[in-house]
Image (cartoon, rainbow, N blue to C red):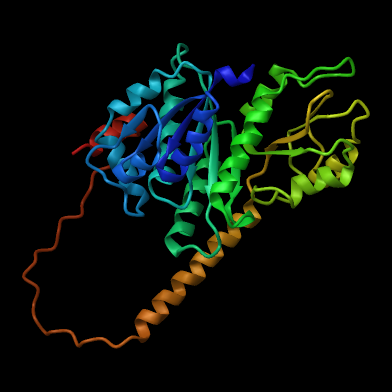
Length: 350
């Protein structure tokens, strides 16, 4: 069972809440956060790694890097993970998770250079609601942009908080959905989606989307709705890019794969299985949802311009005519050679 070879690292408050759901399903789970209040809220959580000296990162993603630099022992705990697949779980809008996720990806990729430590890195990233504060949208865009540019990482599940009013319900949905895919061991004479094929899908770079349909007689329309509308994920980028499609049917009759290919694009591989309790559909190697992320970027830029405009129109006191006695700082800096992420963190350490 793939489940036995998967570990989760919850980053920040949101990531911790979702990861706790996986711990309750008996997955190996770590929690990384600096906020003592957030950690106390994770009742029953084991393996909490506290970012000492940083009680939250105050909305600034850079503070997360500084926090990790001053708690390098956490990297030793990550190195101890025995499972071959590591899911980083985090909110892109916050500061701790969105700041740590790209850094920890780099660190694991560097550890992968040692053949004794070879892990598949997957991400489970939560996008903010449209109504949330400007800084959360800035953080989200910057975080996903960084992740999308990294080679060597596997699938990235992008959860859209706009899909449900109750975000805690969203957390439960993704835990149950991914667990279903990782634990399903259905088989049939007509065909199976075996372990190796599932590992290929998890390890494929790009967006990863899962769905399930629970009805006994599954229709093409239900499958398409589960992929495009009735789900908790960011919209699929309409560019026809997809590497792998898997459908594990709940009936021996099965469904036609052609409507899925017509809707999402021609894949490199199609994996078909039968005999599952619920019909599971998985798309792997999708493009990151550039159109949707561009909308986040444009909304953030418009909000920023509106803030600047409002500030410029507000009343201001006149400047004093005093000469500054503060010396101008020396901004000269030398060009440094490229260093590893771990060395960068050591240089940041207080």
